[in-house]
Image (tube, rainbow, N blue to C red; front, side, top):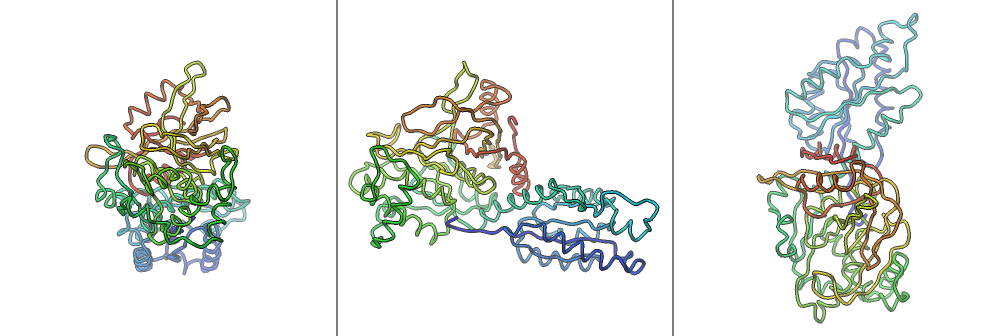
Amino acid sequence: MLVNTKARIGVFSIALGAYLPQFPSLVPEFKAQYEAFKRTIPDTVELVDGGIVTTKELAQAAGDKFRAADVDLVILQLLTYAASYNMLPAVRDLDVPVVLVNVQKKKAPDYEHTDTAVWLGELYACGAVGEMAADLERAGKRHAVITGVVEGGDPEVQAEIESWCRAAQVRRRFRDTNLAQIGRPYPGMMDMYIDETNLYNRMFLYTKQFDWEKMWAIADDITDEALIRKKAQEILDTFEIEGGGTIEKVREMARYVAAFEQWVKEEQIAFIASHYDGFAKGKAGVLDSMLIPAFSMLIKQGVACAVEGDIKVAMAMSILKTIAGTGQLSEMYSIDFEKDICIIGHSGSGDADISSKKPTMKIVPVFHGKTGGGYLTQFYPHPGPVTYLAITQDRDGHFKFVTAEGENEPGPIFTFGDTNMRTRFACGAREFCNRWSEAGPTHHMAAASGRHIDTILKVAKIFNVPVDVIVR
């Protein structure tokens, strides 16, 4: 990604201090188990180590460390029975979910040869997990439970831990980067209008405002011919250009791509919501004509670029790109009632990583509903599972996620330059349209290859926002 972030995960384990002097063998046993557990946390995140907690004082010390690090998530390993005071002081002042990992060392007891120390150290599928969840609930803390076993490996446990870490990465990305709003939303699309201060207070995302006058001049200082040619080749490698592509043909576009990349890094931008509604003459016309492929090159590198100034769909695109590796702007496009499928897509910038073949770039004399003309890009999303995500707000400004899973099917699509997907939903096209619309999303949504609702639910728990699951 052009702007990198790394989630911070607070990790600690707990055990009842009274056991340790009674059963000294538990000390090295728990140390070994904790070290092994920490190795299950993927290196894509930064681990903030709270240690093995056996007293209230150690729990407070872990909490101080987590708070100072501004952790995005806490993962707690339950080694054996422990009392609530081993946990609560470590998380009391945090506003992030606590994932209780209830993983037993051995698959099954050797009943005849198990003494108390072995039972407590290796066979205690933790009776305390209910106690911890009850006290987290009373403390108003969000929480989740993962139960499994160490012996023989447990892919389900590992997958859940990795999914939580991906979800936490979304929070870190929202907190550490900025959203660029260039221009303003498409006039009259009031579903997209947003209070940027409320956005920062509720979702941690800060908005930087930019005028198009500044963007027209953004490439003026890009004169490094080697860099320009390199970016031009990247464009040619990414797109099949109608009528054939050469470095000279996309050279000016390459200058702007290089300039945008430099701007993104300097401003720490991970989201862009833009709309141009000027006269599209002179420099303005040159830039406007090439924005779609230029922003597509940014999306490929992890910067969510939304058309029509839609901040909320830029957020949804970024969430999916972060947790799933793809994030394509889309909207309800048409319905094929004979095949009972929804045609879903959009004109504008797209994500090359979602395309099953090389996307195409073509020149059109006019952008429908928008000023000027220029380059359109068409992507060809993979057949198979697909996840949609929209972000909306209620009357009080609270955010809500709306999500659905379906199946992209091969078949005919429109050929006038817009990205389309033929998506079948388990509830049928008519019912999907009803349910999705009733949930009140903006008319845009993001799409990603694969099934990702389970991770989206984790992201929602981290941000403490409700989710409408339409169909899966």
